[in-house]
Amino acid sequence: MKLDLDTLAALPPPVERPRFDAAALRCGIVHLGLGAFHRAHQAVFTDEAIAGAGGDWGIVSVSMRRPAVAEALARQDGLYTVETLDCEPSYRVIGSIRRTLWLPGASQAVLQAIAAPNIHVVTLTVTETGYCLVRDALDTAHPDIVHDLEHPRSPRSAIGVLVAALALRRAAGGGPMTVISCDNLAENGARLSGAVLSLASRWGNRLPDWIAAHVTFPESVVDCIVPAATEESGARANRALGVQDDASVQRESFAQWVMEDRFAGPYPAWVTAGAQIVPSCAEYRRLKLHVLNAAHSALAYLGMARGHERVREAAADPAIAEFLERMIGTEIAPALTALDVQGYWKKTARRFGNPMLDHRLAQIAQDGAAKLSQRYSPLMLANLRSGLPYARMAEVYAAWLRFMEASGAPVDVCGLADPVWREPALRTAILKAEP
Ligand code: CS2
Image 1 (tube, helix red, strand yellow):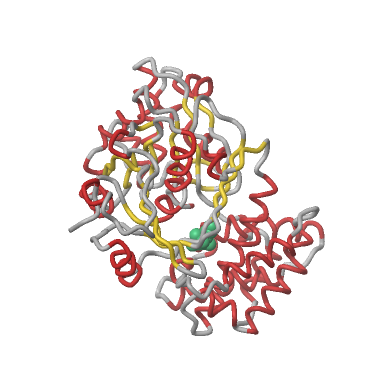
Image 2 (spheres, rainbow, N blue to C red):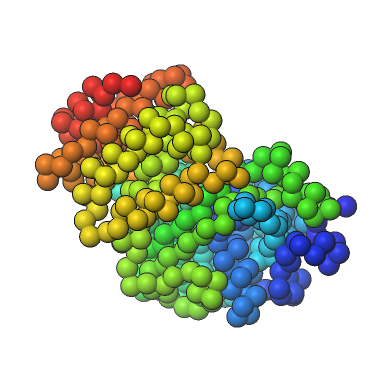
């Protein structure tokens, strides 16, 4: 027996079920990037918003690369379990994802979904590298962008999808739309809109003007620790449900979603689900990116070098704990003036220590060049200019370089877009840092 709309009603009582009629729900959102984070975060906020305030806010969720999750969810009528790992694990079936698509197999359906009049919001989790940026501008040499320039109507990148879909929406006389990046990039809304407008300018016909007049790209800050699902976490969910779920995810109980108040049209009652809609995300983003995410990357590279496998093990290593305390106290906090860095870090360190979470350092170590350039680079440049220390931040870059070397992929620092490599003092500090 598998999880689907037929088996939903018979799930054992401790398992929470959607508090709305999932079968009758219509869609109002398209999401690009059907990974575990989306299922554990935006889809849960949306599920809660629908339960609390109603509305046709089902999600059409698009898998950008691999078909497996889209197919598993399709077999399960879009239903899947979120396992929340606090003192006691708890299980909740989410009903907000109503339709799944696999971009390479259904690009026309994806574009039509975004252009449809019932869709008011597009959200994205396509990772730092999915924006195809180089030095903050669209990388027109990126293979996916090269492809999308040649085949604009069957795009491969998230940027290409948005541009083609917005062209279609305009042609259909479609209404305004809000596009929300949910990735860990500074000013993710402005970066996304810059990339979209830049690609749209290749379409001619004043498409950028139409986009500028009809589409907004609010900044958003997302936070929830979502270790990749494992065989064990899948088996725990199946045991709790008593039926098979091939798309379950695990996460911590904490979740935050802060959005800049710049909506072009209607959107779900996410605030009733605990999201914050604020005039500016800057302070939330600075703490999240330069404290939590920065510490995560440090734990990944320093921790793996010392033989650790999981975040909580690396965080409990006294040498690493002291390194983090000092880096945050003497290099990061002074750069983030007027923010309660120490208070935020205390709470974050507790989350990292969660004994129930098996968050693997190797997961965080992925895409290091893009992550470090967001998490550390702006602070290192700022500290260099204002005479503040940056040696420990440089050590994290050095640990990343050694990690790459050990994995057989040595890095040509001169070829990297991150501006730290173009500052001789920073480059020297990194290359000279001892293990
Ligand atoms: C992590 C993030 O994998 C990583 O790089 O730092 O995914 C982190 O777990 C989330 O941003 C927490 O909200």
